[in-house]
Image 1 (cartoon, rainbow, N blue to C red):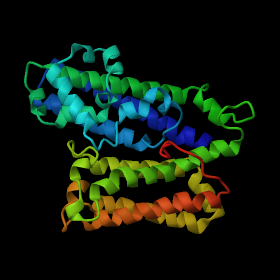
Image 2 (image 1 turned 60 degrees about the vertical axis):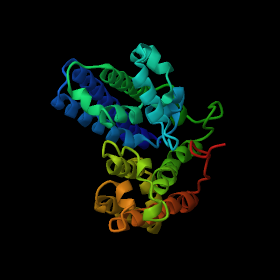
Image 3 (image 1 turned 60 degrees about the horizontal axis):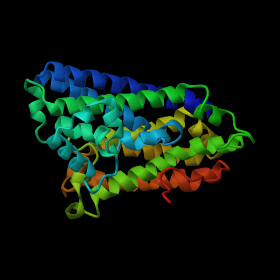
Image 4 (image 1 turned 180 degrees about the vertical axis):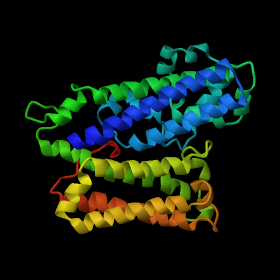
Length: 329
């Protein structure tokens, strides 16, 4: 638990806070002096924030469960297109209350985070952001970026604090409302990679690729408008492995079940290679018979990885699987 907090979780959320602060600054600069260069800068900062977010996305505990932070940052999956409808509605209405901190905090979570900002920066009409004078769309984008930065900073600060949730993780005991002993705290951390892979496969990969090219749904792919689908998925995978490696999970598994850890490392490595070999965006490749092969392979690898991490690893480590943020009711 100490290793995971020190080496991955706290630095990961600090990186998210830093990236989103830069995003807020560049969105504001775009509105102050609209140009194609300023829009490119804002989009680059958005990409940096997506990378940082994707590395910690599946750490759905503690500060990320407070104030609905995870869903406010990333309202996903959104198979009914709620974000698009709400953003387009608010753009048409030009509601000035959304441009205030208080108004944005009370708005639909669908317009508060990264998917909404992606449409504002990349969706239909986004080219107008490069032209002066700056209009409501730019102000709206800046308000969303400011909200993302505020949520990220609050989460990072809570992870860094010695009291609060970190204290609960680090000081299990009979008086602790969440973790009665060290094993329960360790299980909560150890469970993250498996549940993360499970969610990635079920929520992001399978709905997009379908059973074959004709059944693929590229429009469901995360961050497709910005062209960051593959980047986000790769950072999801890399982040989960880095948490396991830096948090001592991999070392514990290697000590007790070396063959299992070797298998986990191999499947991760093959997954990274499969992602790298996808030609174009994953959703589009899934719909193209000539480009689909690496996507199919990735689906098989993530299923294998889920089995290794959720079905085999807990038993080898003598741990009982707990409920998590993806178990539903």
